[in-house]
View 1 (cartoon, helix red, strand yellow):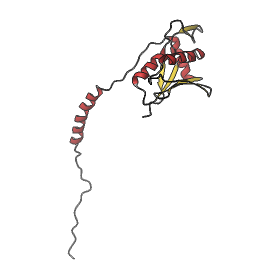
View 2 (cartoon, helix red, strand yellow; view 1 turned 90 degrees about the horizontal axis):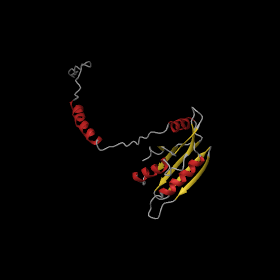
View 3 (spheres, one colour; view 1 turned 135 degrees about the vertical axis):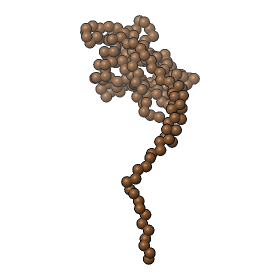
View 4 (cartoon, one colour; view 1 turned 90 degrees about the vertical axis):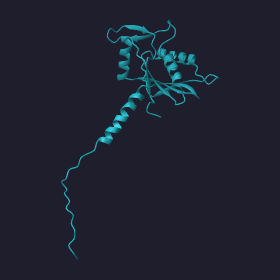
Length: 181
């Protein structure tokens, strides 16, 4: 047997990393992202709440005694759930004949719940996927404030200890099912 050929391999050699393909992809993606961001809109409804209501919201965040939530479904209607120390009370509001929400009944039901729990200013929404954005916004409008100037709710000012009245019912709406599909 003749001598074997043994290649000389240098394991300490260096090579250059070619970043040109990565840069080409980035140059193409940046304009696409910029153009597509023009079509994505984030809507925030910014409202100035009275100081007393802001204090009540902060207090409610620390020690939630009562939670109020709404399950909104296009087939079954609206279920308003009041959870008070583990005791749940459910008020159901059915759909109107043309498969539309009964906004007037929703407003009246929320108003009655607010009269029972004037210290609560936060509500959770659980809309199903078949509920349109327009209907969700209309329901949010119904629960935010009273329609009548005669109906007001007492709120205790934590700093002065005085009672004041407000027409806000549930100005803070939280979507509880945002991580679902």
